[in-house]
Image 1 (cartoon, rainbow, N blue to C red):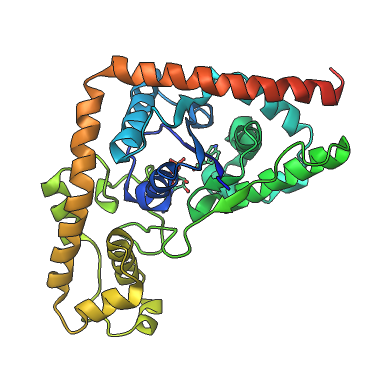
Image 2 (cartoon, rainbow, N blue to C red):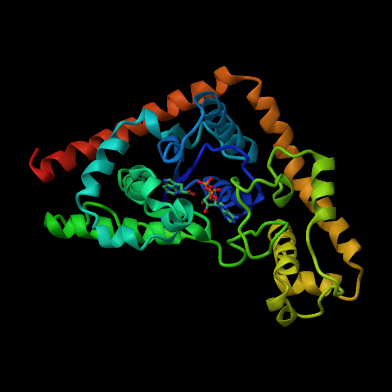
Length: 333
Ligand code: ADP
Ligand code: TRP
């Protein structure tokens, strides 16, 4: 049987290799299976949990749509839309915030990381962010949610919220309890400058990530300068537990080539590090530059991108508003 897929990406700029290998690559694969129904959402309401410049936000929304399409998601066969245009998301988030418990949210590690030391100054939206994410998922009877490893905890919260709602109102299976789809290997791509930190949009140094809009020279340069260590290429996987940067680069190579980790180690064992970096740059350039060129081309035509969002939001709104109607009935509104 086919799957009902829903996932979201924040329009906060700098989409990078981590987003691609951790999430978007999987979106593309799932969307190509004719049995699946896929919805991909540009989660702009999530983006404003930290302050955004309106012009940049507008550009980033279009860039995220362009990235989906350039990566291989067909907008005719799948729904691509922006969250703010389907009001059921905000409404369901409020209702579900009355189901979710403070104790559950207090455990969310992403909030702790993002809020940093001064929690008092974080927005309430940043705190309740995972409840909005639950609303996104549950409105569409989603069966599977492809995400990177960092979103696992949020997905567990969505499952808890669905189950509590179903129990509280005695409506078995009203909200479908969603399953995560997280890649088993290399679900977390690390920074090129620090193998213990995840590759991230918000990292100040651009050298820490490969952006999906980088050109050939930028990619080659970033890989050349990527942090490694003084030891030669490893001859076994066990050697890598204390070499996070090397492990990450081998992981990236393995993800891009669909070779497993041991195969990659075997291929490069005994060779110079520079040989490996050269091969890695080559596979990155082959994979990323066509996407980068296509993103830039699509961005020239903002009317086309806006039309996709408009069509997508009409389709999404139909599904979400029907679910919302049933939610009202169940609650007693
Ligand atoms: P972020 O600010 O974390 O990049 P996004 O909403 O843009 O947040 O993330 C989009 C998707 O990319 C999510 O499924 C997330 O888990 C995934 N992702 C983000 N960073 C990484 C990474 N370094 N490695 C693997 N997956 C990642
Ligand atoms: N919180 C996710 C992230 O930062 C983005 C997101 C919002 C999402 N709503 C979602 C992902 C629903 C999957 C399903 O990456």
